[in-house]
Picture 1 (tube, chains in turn brown, cyan):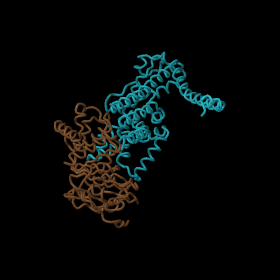
Picture 2 (cartoon, helix red, strand yellow; picture 1 turned 45 degrees about the horizontal axis):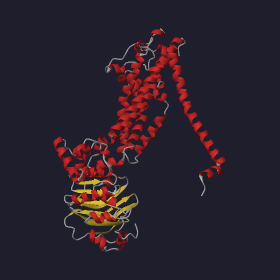
Picture 3 (cartoon, one colour; picture 1 turned 90 degrees about the vertical axis):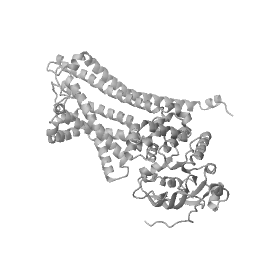
Picture 4 (cartoon, helix red, strand yellow; picture 1 turned 180 degrees about the vertical axis):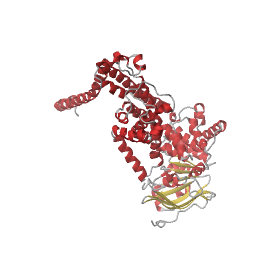
Amino acid sequence: MNSTPSAGAPAATPHDVGIAAFAIRDLTVRYGNTVALDHVSADLPERRVTALIGPSGCGKSTFLRCLNRMNDHIRGVRITGSVRLYGEDIYGPEVSPILLRRRVGMVFQKSNPFPKTIFENVAFGPRMHGVSDPVRLREIVEHSLHQAALWDEVADRLDTSALALSGGQQQRLCIARALAVEPEVLLMDEPASALDPIATAKIEELIHELKERYTVVIVTHNMQQAARVSDYTAYFFLGRLIEFDATDRLFTTPSRQETEDYITGRFG
Amino acid sequence: MKSFAHLTREHAAWLARRRRRDAVFVVAAALATSIGLLVLAALVIDVIHDGAGRLSWAFLTSFPSRRPAQAGILSALVGSCWLLVLTALIAFPIGVATAVYLEEYDTTETWFRRLIEVNIANLAGVPSIIYGLLGLGIFVRVLEPITGGRSVLAGALTMALLVMPIVIIAAREALKAVPDGLRQAGYALGATRWQVVSRIVLPSAVSGILTGTILALARAVGETAPLVTMGALTYVAFLPELSLEGLRAPFTVLPIQIFNWISRPQPEFHQNAAAGTIVLLALLLAMNALAIVLRLRLQRQRES
């Protein structure tokens, strides 16, 4: 199968990115005959929040899932191009997805705590990676729950089921669980879309704090949210990266017509 | 605007017809349900009426005898329990492993997977006597040096084959019911496939798997045809040793003992058969109850 030539203009990467955590070049993803991502290139800045926006089916979730190779699990997927994390090709032969996911954590749209206790949920990742000392585990769990701004609410009931928590608490638990393996990057796939406004505000506040230590990439359907939480925003449409710029610039003076149409609500 | 009273008058005939149809259907559904219950009740009452008089501790702890009044079901009861435990030990790990392979590992449409699936579906529909012939051919004859011929081990292997498709199907359903988000969360934390299966998927599916397995075993306890075919004895006046050698001893089970008694001319033996049936029914009900209790308890554990 011939690869389709790059459609549209090459993606603009903002020039003031600083250190890039991820450097993506010509990333193309096909599911069978459908092209989900079409020659996407971008540099995702370190310790910043990058928001991915665009209408449903534009490829933003596919893009996100390429960054921790979650797409590997999908049948019939073909991925070409390169994704480098601090210079190392994460699709290279010597990189195992298991180790990659220690460095790149993920939070899903629908909170998905394990049917275990709160403690065991957070301890799951470290246990998988060989931490068995109870004192150390306890430290990790406490630290992660603090980072996810959940400690004060659950400190006295770590041994109760995670499923008894509210939706917003469950989602913060999932964030704590992802942080417990000490990743460098946190991918978030519409983490607040199933939450009420108060819980959403807590998650957004949390994202603000997290970017001091982590590179955050967040998919969102909500443009106000993108404007509120992110430093950079990438606009995807039909599998192509249309525009990528500092959030305030992209929302005030977009350089491309398609972007302007989308953010002003003319379609999508 | 029309009042309700007005509407009711206007549609009186039509409403009455609809209510009648409703009532007819309720009665039909209730009748259909009660047919099953009535037949079961008739069977149970009849069996209890015939056999309850013979039920006693001595009946449970005596070996069969030519004198009906001294005959008991000890060897059949022990044989059934042996068979049950052995069948579970063989069918459970193989069945669950197959289900895990099909649901968690080989998720692409390979020819191998399709071959297994077609085979399982076919095996589930094979009449049990065919399994008996298979058991006779392979486990009793070919593998005689291992199984010791018409032994409890050969019987358990045959029964394991018989219940395996049911265990596999039940386990697959239980695995399918585990939300995919849990697997994704596991993978996203850098867990390997085996870690995801063993620490997330199987614990979530265990109650469904156990329930299905117990129900499958309940079926095995009641099976007679395959064991008759492969030649389980009808008169066993000893208990198998609790040892590897005991696995190779001849055996009998409750349904065969009942079949044997019912085919004799003396009415006293028919009483024995009825009493044996009560024991068998009690065993089956106990297993089904265990399945329900297990499921409820595991569900509660997961929710609290």
